[in-house]
Image 1: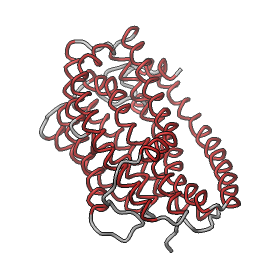
Image 2: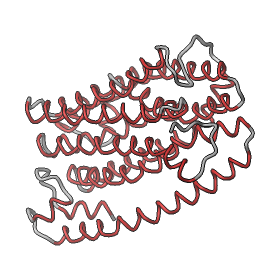
Image 3: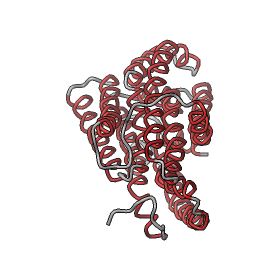
Length: 371
């Protein structure tokens, strides 16, 4: 049975509605992990460290898409709740067009400052070259990546979360397959890793764009519109929390990598990258829930259903608290395994639970980064 934004949301109905968004974000995190595993196992430690060093800079630029997606979905769903579907389509279209324009500008700026930024992070020699090669290829599809982040939210607002999940799975599978083909078969190295990621971003961004351009049966469609600075400002304000969350996470990664390059070098950056892959998967659950539930809240806010909003708040607090407890408890055995790996000699099978087999960095580095 199809769930609509206007429905009354019990806990079960809410979980069913947000489930595709949660799975979508988990898949996004997992195929990022697979990308790193292929680089570390088939290309080497230095390219793997280079990817992890420059990735936070690329994520900061792509975070603008999260801002317009989460902030915009709240504004658009509010308009739908107020019974203004034409306004909702105009607002939606304006945000998509603004993201495309912003993506082009950020791409040009990123290409201009990529090498100085990588050098400022501490990259030199081969590592600096790898950062630039990987970054330039990813920046060429930055606009598609930003659109992917936008449509992850708007497909939920359009009551098509299953389509968003299908697109994400398709992009993830493409990334994994192309990683194997480009890296393990063609031996393209870090160029292959970047090309595989870029291809997945094109799939994730362009398929929903085509869907909304063509006539469809969802609540949203791309139409002619004009710039509304008031709505644009409201969107940026609503999405500023998600923007700052992504920027702050990336800045923390940048600072960690900068210090690790000073005191440990490439080994430390590579080890920290492994730990961050694990944390991304866990954080994806909460990000997915926020993406899936935001349009529901926006719709009932616009419709003036205050009792429903209070119920959604209570259910969200209860669910997020429960998941925090469960996930924290699940992490404890993993930490014990890492502690065990730290006291075992390199090459011991337990070390494989923590580190890819060819990174040639000790488990002690992973434990040092974890603490």
